[in-house]
Structure formats: C-alpha cells, structure tokens
Length: 329
Image (cartoon, rainbow, N blue to C red; front, side, top):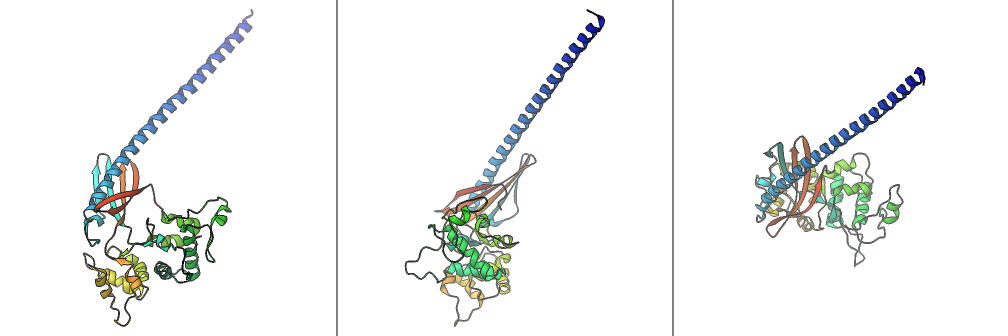
C-alpha cells in the first residue's frame, strides 16, 4: 500500500469520525433542548395550576361577600361586595377581586318571545320596548334596532322557522363560509351577538356595556346598582319619559345606600299624577339582585390568570353556576 493510499484512508477515517462527532453534537443539543423545553413546560403548568387554585380562593371570597347580602331586601353600591379596591397579597404575586351586578344591565334573553296563542304577535312586549328605547338613546337607526332584535329573537326561540322580515335560522347560518347552527335556546354570553347581529363599525362596542345574558327570561333592573354611565339604559327602562340627561342627574343624586323601594325612585322622577309611569315599566324595576359576576385576577410568578365566576343567590346561598377563563369579550 502506497503512502498516498494510506493518507487517503486516514483522511476518510478522520471525516467519518468528524461526521459521527457532528451527529452526536446535534443529538446532544436536541436532547438538551428537549429537556429544557419539557422542564419549562412543566414549570409553566405548575405555576398556572397554582394560579388557578388561587383564583378559586378569590372566588370563595366573592361567594362569602355575596352571602352577606343574601338576606338583604336592598342591594346597593354602598355594600362591601361592590368595593373595587380589593387586592390580597400572596407569595409571588397578588389576587385582585371585583364583583359586578348582572342585573344592572339589560338581560338580552328577556327578548325571548313565546309563540302567541292569541294571534296578536304584532304587539311589542315591555322588553322589546325597552330594547328599542335603549338603542334609540345610543343613536342606533330604527331599522338597525329592529334587525338586531329580530335576529336575537330567532336565535333564542325553539323553532326552526324564521320569524319577521329579519328572522334567520339554519339555512342562513349553514350557508356561510364557516357554517354553524343557532342554538335555539337562551344566550350564554353577550359575545354571541357577533354571530348573528351583523354589527357595523363600532355598534357592538357601544351596545355591549349595557347588555348581559342571564339564564332566565324574567329579571328586573336594579336601579340601585346602575352607574351614571348607564343612564341611557335607565331612561329606556322607564319608557324614555325623561331625557337621558335628566335620568343622569337623578342617578347622581341617588342616596348613598340606594332607594329603599321602587316607589321612592318613581317619586324622584317628578311625573304628574295625570301621567304616571305605566305599570309595565314599574314591574321591570327593582332594588335587589340575584345574579352577579365575580372576577378573580391572579398575578403569580409573572403570569396572569383571569377567572370570571357567574354567581346566583339561592335560598341564602351564593351558588357558582358557570365559569369563564381568560379575557371575556
């Protein structure tokens, strides 16, 4: 064997060794990255699990706060549950809590309209009149208000046939690029309106703060927990017999502990005895609430978790009947 042949063989052996070393380095790097990724994933999971349990702890505090008012005949913003500055320190972070009265908004499910047995389906229900009044106060054109209401009612009714000129059922929604079916049952979240209301420009963001979706049809509007910003809703709830500005002024001088009854609020309106507020509107008002939404905002080890708990007061107890995680839109 010549020296040149031996040199070539040594070169080939060296290349093979270098190739093996390169492959081993790649495998080692991949193995290290895999271990690092798995370790980080497990750490993140452990942290988020701990944040979840902290959020449930915040939920229990909300439950206790609401059970304190379970026996009260008047629910108002001067009570402890309505505080907005509640923050509890924890190791590695904090828990912030907030409770919102879900009867300080228009229950979109109140638009549910059962099939008429008398054939008089043209008469507007009180909820329909209030909804129309609200959209009018928010400067929605009458045609848009009728469209949104018609689509909502068809979305939550039990049948499968479109009602009215703006009604829509399976055939419309299954023909879309991303087909879906209407639930034909009560709405769970106000965000569902984006599926059928065909909002234009900023309509959804303007309307959403005044709406909620409760698991029953007949609920009252708590006049003691409305904020001044919700004056357009309260004005609509009394049939717009006063302007939004006049209703705003009434809300701003509301007693610290709220009105003791609806009659006290009606007296504040200053209506004449000859033209009293119609009974149908009075029946939609109240000074107490059963439905609430609690927010537990957990900041833990540089991670954040939002837990929204939907709570109802039943027989002196606060019962959590639904939860939502993340950002609610």
